[in-house]
Image 1 (cartoon, rainbow, N blue to C red):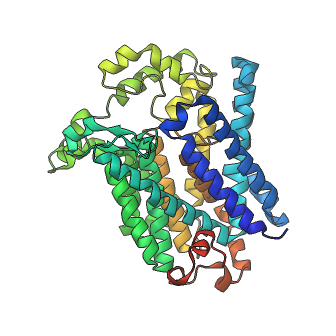
Image 2: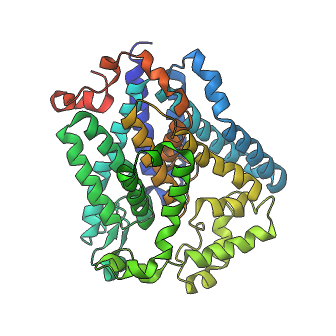
Length: 440
């Protein structure tokens, strides 16, 4: 099909833009519009899957590599439909379709075509830089931009002296994850191209991350940065990588008092607020898991369950009552039980193990490793569903999915390196359309 690749890129951009819109306060208040935006995201993915080409020799190993997704789908569907009613069949179907599109089929396209992978990184990098701009406006105390409401948290200024802003996103934490993922995509592209464009984008998303004050994403960026200075063995050895990641996730809580003594750190990271009541919410969530350990309380039930304990959670400092429990895996355990949650965790763990596989594609591997660290860290403090259609959920699933198929990446060697790679400094002289699509 003529212009197949250009159409795939156009659908990728459209899906990403719609995923951003779906996560804005403006669209959330318009139920019908939000449903239409969600349907449009699904339609874009359907078009991509129709337009993309899949090498036959990659399909079977990719399907085998995605066994945790198959297993999760079976148990998710069984628990949801059998124990919680057939009225959730539509929700299950929608999440499953998007999960397969973003965790398996789209990553398979990227594994088959290195240029398409770079194109997605460009979309994330440039879009994140543009999305950072509204957060600068919000940090100045302005509550809307061109009629679009901005999500600001003025109360954070009493700690850091700066109003936290999520820009157009519903939550500052979601904005923070967008910025964190965009940050490493900008760094990846700059290292490969030395283009001024990505240097500017890098500065913009870094400023957006600072403005967001999203501690989970910032924490993940710091941990990911640590692997750039550690000996290579920590990145190549699975036991050392997993062990050091666990150490980095837990160590700050052991030195919390010492961190609070660092000038400026206590205020900016709101250390005096601890986990902002998450510990109280998690304890309550665990009690709910104990009530229904095998089947959970039903997919999407966290909002009602946390709302029922609003007064108790508010007294503990937790402001998220009526939404979820601000931990991907705890929320899953409450809603679907420990068995389904354990399988769901494999969607994160297997990519962590596979990204350690030796490869000559160092820049791509370092990008995915950094993104996995950020995604895993942020998922411990917020909820990100594989199968969701928010832009952050799309990125989480896609990057985890590419890492899950990393053992197939040597197929990139079949492409001409001169054609498949981004030429050094080429973006500086390319038209904007070529910079975005990756094809001239």
